[in-house]
Image 1: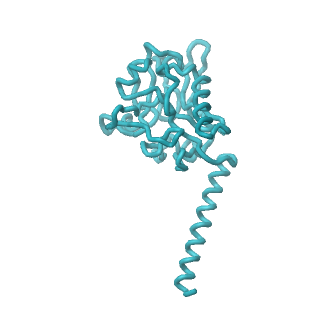
Image 2: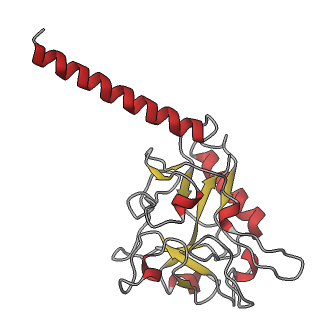
Length: 226
């Protein structure tokens, strides 16, 4: 074997070793579990923003994940809950575990909670895939479905104030409003809200038809919390 060929082999082996270490590190951060740990719901439960509360939303995540072969994880909806009546405030960021989060194609979307809510996360139209590994239609597609329900501020905390930002804590399918993000990070302009994946603007209502008017379909994010 020539010296040049030997150097090439050594470089290939070194690259393979580095890749193996990175994969092992990601597996270690996720408690030894591998595979998909993030997706956008391919469909909503069918009642607009009435998801059956946080429990119903979590159940829908679990059902979709199980159908895609990832039912062995503990899935949580990325949704905040406002302090109303007997409901205490819940922050979406506190429901989803520690990360890392990987889509159905094996691409890391974020390594941890701070990365997810920082400017350098990898969540966009190309990576925010459904549990089936399919793209979600965004701005410029027909129909536009880039409004994703969150009820959250950019930092993942529940929207402050008394105004409804969660469609009655995800129990309303008529009047009301919910904060949504844009999974494709685009909007009518180049402003920060238009590019926000989790806090872009309030919906015009809670029904399926109302959500459609600004480019929504009652979809939301699901994260593996274990």
